[in-house]
Length: 152
Image 1 (cartoon, rainbow, N blue to C red):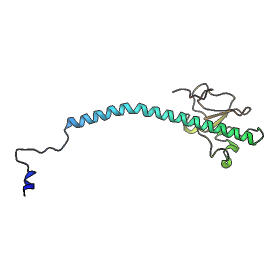
Image 2 (image 1 turned 60 degrees about the vertical axis):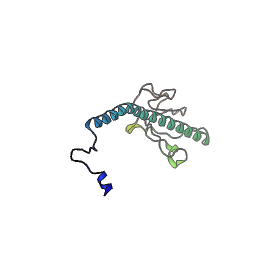
Image 3 (image 1 turned 180 degrees about the vertical axis):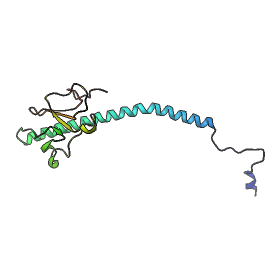
Image 4 (image 1 turned 45 degrees about the vertical axis):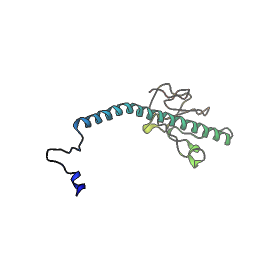
């Protein structure tokens, strides 16, 4: 009985367990400030990830072309302009498991290949890869001659 009397509320005393409006507003303001700080870092991280992935895909593609050349008496693979048609590089999983994609360009054209003998000079979204049919050089779309992204 003694334990029960300890928790008894007297008629003129109020027991308050809820948060006040001011406390809730302070928490909301703090969360808003944190969101404002974190959001730009997140957006930058997405761009950095697409640049890093594209650079990695480009390096894999260049290695695959070089291995193909060595194994096939200095011949280039039968690359066809268009949507991810890397020929022998992607058939049979011997050189690449699948067609590379350029996430920096993004969208439906991230795997498209064009034939040209130089890298991009401006950012674009029409193709993901540039292949030189005479030298076997390959560049990522929207990347410059130093393999650095254009724009952003």
